[in-house]
Image (cartoon, one colour):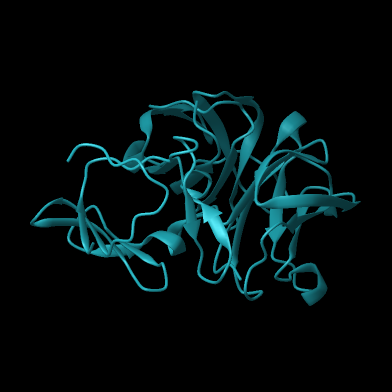
Length: 146
Length: 137
């Protein structure tokens, strides 16, 4: 068998050969994948569920991002298309340092209204000037979708 | 059918787009969710790569400024790069990582490690970690 072309294939195991299982699909649709070594990992858990790149207070590229809110200087909200199941997802962000302005990013806001299943606010902070400041930044988020 | 023996999976309607059931009832996209690049390297003392994926080379451009080149390039410069540094026991406790604000290409990205608080000086850190998401070319 070299190629199957179809819309739906109901299968539990995907193998390279009879001895080598690459993926196992559970009855909930979860996919267990053979890792690089002996251990297995989970496909869904390893995927970034949303990511974005913000330049000049606008998202220039993104995934699972429905809209943005430029709240104020150095504070920016991403609204998700498909929400997370709980506000305990991971959000990692890094920002730019153009023109000698050194900024760092805070994300997953301490105020619950700024970190929900549907949105996440990121702050970019000029550490030398001790103030929020607009700059480019990138963010990626991991967790369970609803 | 319980077992399928194959080499390659690709989308039918679009070869480069495969939907995946999420943890709940929503779907997500396999290609968009995959990290397209990661790296971990020593930026202090003897500069060296530790591990990486889709990384052709890394370069110690100058103090605190490092260039990571990709094996497979991105489709545009709008990909997402996030990272962090591991604090040292001898200095740079409050260091953070940022893009350099300019040299972000489809084939490579420059990053700065910066010492905080107060002096904002670029500073070599050990260890530096980056993850990139976006569309490959």
